Amino acid sequence: MAEIDPALATPRKSSYSGQDGDCVEIAILDSDRVGVRDSKDPDGPFMTFTHTQFAAFLAAVKNGEFRPR
Image (cartoon, rainbow, N blue to C red; front, side):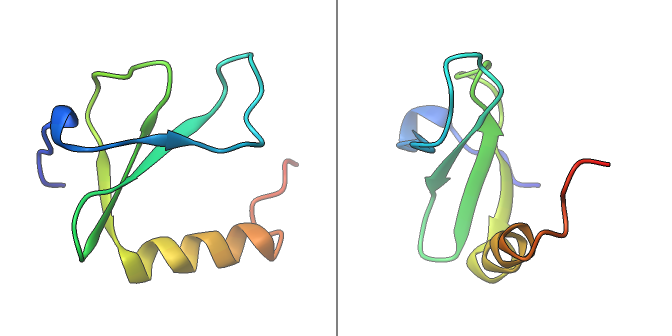
């Protein structure tokens, strides 16, 4: 996981996020990386993924692979 300066990223929260703080922010970091972090820690670190990895994650979410048990 590469260290990303949060000041250099422009994170955004999903429009589906509620006001309870249980959400994540994503930021396009560069042409090959997407950053993900906890929205409750706006100065916290990003977990970084390639665009391919992040697209695979989103496809799995849409496919229902992460439903609560």
